[in-house]
Length: 114
Length: 117
Image (cartoon, rainbow over all chains, first blue to last red):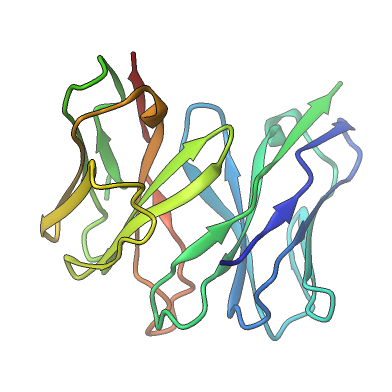
């Protein structure tokens, strides 16, 4: 099966930029996603990128996709304490038609310090 | 819509007991997924349904686990008998899928935290 890898932990100071990296294995994924999980809650979609794009910007969030290296990154500008959470990248499984069957990475815990 | 609703939020039970987790997906969503989250294994897909029909149950750990979706607004995940290693947070999620211009976003419930003693 597919393996999606992330570093486990990232600590940044409030106001700095955070960069969370992800390596995926399935080059045929149509969409790649970033989800956020706050303590005691389910995952929520943060942003996504279509596989024919290299970059997507959405306010403080920038997603970069390098298909050659199968590398996905999420940059959060001006990181705030409210951004402290676990961030998961996810890829859609191939050959599943329109089903959004996702494989999630291990998650990166982002800690924002004052 | 109230979002995906799961119950119970917390369950503590003893080894050998039957556990039933419940999920109400978002109305109109075609797909329903059951995930399990543990520190050791992360998020694992257990099973998913399309229009109430189980499509892929390859992630179900063993025969002690079963899932049903009797109608479009209700699904259950049952563990019988439960074991301590089943302790985890179980998430239900629903989606429109990626057809008709949808992005495949999964909408997650708050999860059911299961502790088996």
